[in-house]
Image (cartoon, rainbow, N blue to C red; front, side, top):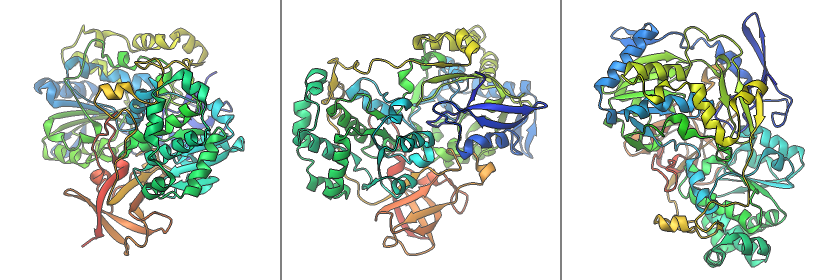
Length: 621
């Protein structure tokens, strides 16, 4: 078909037709195919500007006493290899994430580090908690496809600012004229746009979901045949949810019984749920995901919810990373990398901006500037992590390299063929991985010598995709599994999780109350995490606070010994005790706001509790 795919960490994974002239990219035209629908968000079109950004890293650079100096690729690989060879692998960490969903960009480059036995993160920052929580009951974590969402009569967006961060899903629902509800902790764009807005206290989503479940059971609105034939542990679940009465729900969540009953009626009518990743970044977040999904177990609708479909396709991501022939010496939760940076003497970063995005990420920069940490960064532009680096390596955008791109929403797998030649001396991530592997003495190791495209071919086999077919056609549709097959110990959908019980976890969704001021974040339209700061300007350090909580223009938010300074925007629609920041800005003095974010790992997938960060709120001195 000749499409390329936006590789952004985003549900939509838009398909484009690149428009080039005289070797220069002029525009990206959104494809008029389902589910791109002929339009894209502001970030998608801005990739042309990003391609030619004045802040592009065009050549390798090494930090000397006088600053960064340009060096050759040979010198850069040699410098990095020497640093890694001198270090104990247990004191070397690589940090990467889903800044680019290409199989050869994100996954394959971990191979030399796994061959060396370096330390890895647990890749938990985004969706891991929800994936692990869903598997406790369903034995899988995938659900709805776009076509099923397009046919929904009613949709609940739970913990997701869909208007901003799920634009095509939102468009499908609006085109279907479906009734809409949204559940969130603050007045997002989506809360303001739906038919039924539901604002809950932070951390209490699980209570609301279990209250919905109780009402469906007590009103005899659940699918008895499905429950009897396909599920395990219903009686224990039904007895458990009895305590989640309308009075208890209102007391814990702040949601009135009238609004609860409206939500129950929406679900009884067959509503679908889009469950946001932000829930996994909260206290009780995994339990909320569990409870929300079990509403659809009651309704006999195993495809009634969508969280992420990345696990539906069968792509062998572990093979791409080389875990069959090498493994990390240790795994560190992403939320704790900043706090534990003193344990490492070398860090290699690609496809990520951890100084800004990880809790206490500012400590990475501090360690590099003190000389305690050798920081190497392979990136496209001079972002906040790159600015602290000892070694900078130029990377290409997805417009400048061939790759294979998958979506965690729709089922289209795309051969992304480079639209233009790389800018400057940019080299793809898999090239650097192989050259580095050889330079550290891994020549002949199967993880280094296996051609990246051969590795991709093997990784795609479980998905039923032949690489040759993908390269020839450009786009192929992936297949989802049987929705009535549950890979659990009982072989059934488990209301009462035997896996959780075996692991010493609560077999039923658990709730713990939160007390204090809660800092939370929501997406905003011009940026994806920390991308497009240069194109649209950085987000502003503005905290929306209920006027009864704070009077003043400037506030300090503190957690432990960390403090950030922000402007205050009084907003009576923000619940008391909630502090809302949009995007991932720097504070008024240039510190990342994540300096005060809670990095505590959640119990199922390890995702940090960033969106329920308890802080002290005070006037700044």
